[in-house]
Every structure is written in structure tokens, then in C-alpha cells.
Length: 218
Image (cartoon, rainbow, N blue to C red; front, side):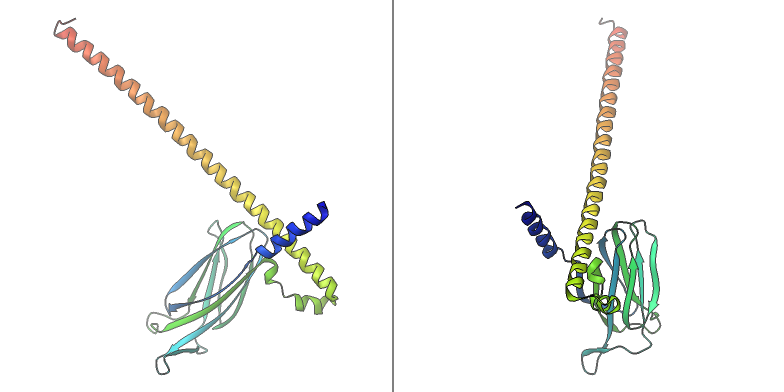
């Protein structure tokens, strides 16, 4: 019964985890568009994109001209550049994370302000972890049977779940450290306020005592 429960839990986790996102967005030729992806450490990320150029005659987006390229820049949570490269109008980029956390992925065209101004539509598909692996190519290269390939996929998914759990623990630890630091600062601020009130009260008592003595009321 315990084995069955464990299997059901793992299966549910595999169904819930979705580390693939596809979208499209519009930008100007000189505009930069950035996205934030939370990625565990030691995780493969593959991005596929296609750029379309707006045609005023047909009032539609058509495949862009060969001269338009797309510059991809990726920064890790420490603001270090992981990837910075100029690609063609359609292609893919890959990188592997070495630090868990929020990675900033920016895309912008190679157009200059002198010739820019046209609208672009960019189709972007980002695959993270085992979703970035082409298992058909792996099966053909390693000559795996269908059962072996399925086992390989399940093992990769379990490994990705482990990385996600480690990343969640990392986030929890970082949040706990931030909370403890904030609570400590609040405590010291309260102590400082209490000290100032005590000093001010003592000074006021001394001042009033001196005032009454000067007036010979005491």
C-alpha cells in the first residue's frame, strides 16, 4: 500500500509540473523585452523563437527579412551574464543554470534607431529541465526501446522534481533568513526608541528639577 501511495504521489507531481511556456509578443525594432524565469541550479533551458515583421500593405505579420536578427541576453540571480549572443530571425538558444533563482531573459532586435520603427511579432517557446530534452533524438542516438525511453523520461522527471524541491527549500531558507533579519532590525529599533524615551524623560526631569530649584519652589 505504501508503494502504491508513493507511485500515485509521484505521478501526480509529474502531471502538475509544467516547465514549458509558449507565447508571442509585439515589440518595436529598437525595443527590449525581458522575462523572468525561476530556474533551479544545474538545469538545461532551451528557447525557440521566430520573428515576424509587420507588413502595412497586407496589414499582417509576415516572415522577417534576412537582415533582421535577434539578440538574446540572459542574466542569473547574481546579475552575471550567462548568455549574450546575436542570432538570426528564427532559431533557438540554450544555456544551463548554475545558480538557483530568477533568471532574466531579454530579447531585442539588431536594428538601430536610424532604421528602426517597424513592429515585430516574436513567438517564444521556453522549455526548462526535462522538457528541453529531445527524447526522439536520444532514442535514435542511444538505440533505446520504447520501454527504455519511457523509463528514461520518468527518471529525468523525478530528477527534475528533486531539483524543484531543492529550489523550494532554498527559497524557504532565504525567506526565513530575510524574516529573521527583519525581526532583528525591528527589535533593535524598538530598543533604540525605548532608550531615547528613557534619556528624554530623564533629561526632562533634571530640567524641571533645575527649573523649580531656580524658582525656589523646591
